[in-house]
Length: 224
Image (cartoon, rainbow, N blue to C red):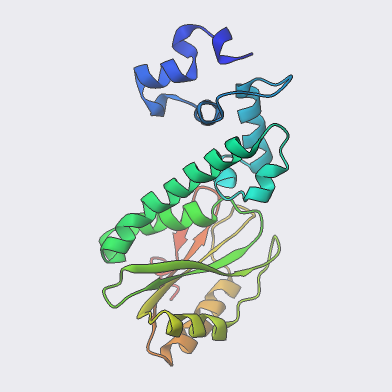
């Protein structure tokens, strides 16, 4: 089935214009971006297959050019459009964090790390480096591991903080299992990093654990 086969008020474009983007399902929004399907597969079916392949919009958000190139029917133009839209989303969420202290908008910080790490299928440890006014300088992926484990080296985090002249950091990592509960290992790692960074006068403000649809602040839990 193609959008043209649907009643006028159920076609994604007409539905969006009449009722707003919130009325559309994830597959319908993606179908609008793709515009056309491939031989034997309409655009709505293609969009749904992509969401299933990557585990929803969160997974698609973190797909790389190579991941998209492996999908039949996604030519260079479609791949470029998807990657561009996803990068626009990341930058839009990051913009307030560059302009004002992160504690002015703590939910923005959670949204940002969820956007960056939430859909990944392996564990990634990232650091948000902050300036003296606690504005975001850079989010950098520092270490990447397996589905269940990643090795974090405090000396590398310290070296990068010095290079960026950071005054504070926020730590973040994902749990590909989907559960955002901090583990004992997460608590121990946080303490090791706090001790290492304190030697160069860099504060650790928080450590976020990103799961499926949830971000847990270890500071809010009293685990730091």
